[in-house]
Figure 1 (tube, rainbow, N blue to C red):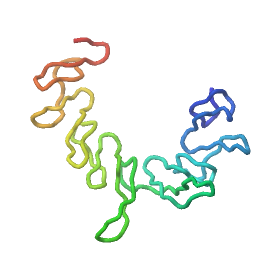
Figure 2: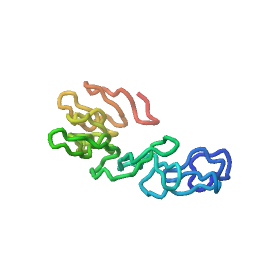
Figure 3: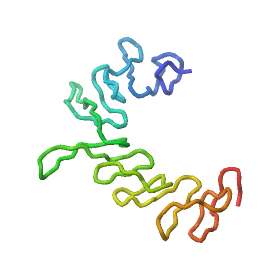
Figure 4: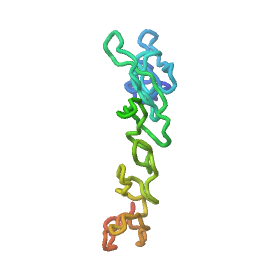
Length: 173
């Protein structure tokens, strides 16, 4: 088993950790895994120097550290259902605003915000909200573009003609 807050290791000791869980760093002076000071920081160089933020937070560059690594401050995206966002400049108003670049599953980016995909749709295209992948048990109706319930028992994917193309696990065509 790995040390606490270590995701992958080659042994149980803290210095044998190869991948840390988000929000932690390895302090080589203390030879311990420590928490980042900013609770919204996913990865930090030291307790007070963050290099990347957790989902839903924007990494605002604050300076270059002495070893030329970017140091960031984590600010909330402030956009519902947004995983990753960027600061954009409104050319007309000459002001910055937050725009979402990646939304949670079941949502898509529309004008920098996250809007829900159509009913029973797992992934949909940005801006148009056209469904690209339906939830399990549903298939895209090519005429309407909507996700419709698959009518064949234990069928996972159906073609446009209503023929089953692949089955759910443990079932065969």
